[in-house]
Length: 264
Image (cartoon, rainbow, N blue to C red; front, top):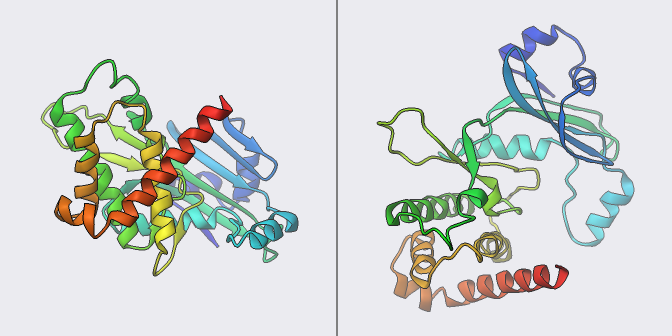
């Protein structure tokens, strides 16, 4: 399969897109054996590209023996972006995508998205909240929007699987009249899409989010607000009928935090 927007279709003019991307000398953000992520500029626009070179049979078998679906290339992120865009969640803007080969172990693929400029990750936004408390309205709006995104994903059968504050980008506006808060969700490489997500996947996502927010100075009321917004109901129901779920989230998040501290 091949998708190119007008800019890339005109720029490459029938050339092999994968070869064209491999020849670009961009700023590399991540490079491992089977995948490379880099930033580059074309016709004055900034883009991010992910190249997948085939995961190999050992990696596929390892995932299957661990009862995990292996991520074979860019197709998973391509599908997740398209799905999420239909749900009213801002995310990466697709520019090009391609996949080549029928052998799942050696299939090559690529994904190109526009650089989301004038954005800051929530990890950076919240980094000094302990020392410098944010305005109540700002904190409340961010909690509400993150909870909305999480709930929308989960009720529509999507588990992000890397659901941390660093993967939420807060947009800054050049228009002083624009008071609307906008978050974009990124890094959907491992996203899982199923008709009926098992509860463990929801716990994994929400626990990851809680884990990444443990050191930003959130209080008990902030956590309760998130729970209420995520469940879209009254807090009493969440803390009684949904107690098992939220207890599992807390235990998993604290275990992740404990492992992180032990590794430091």
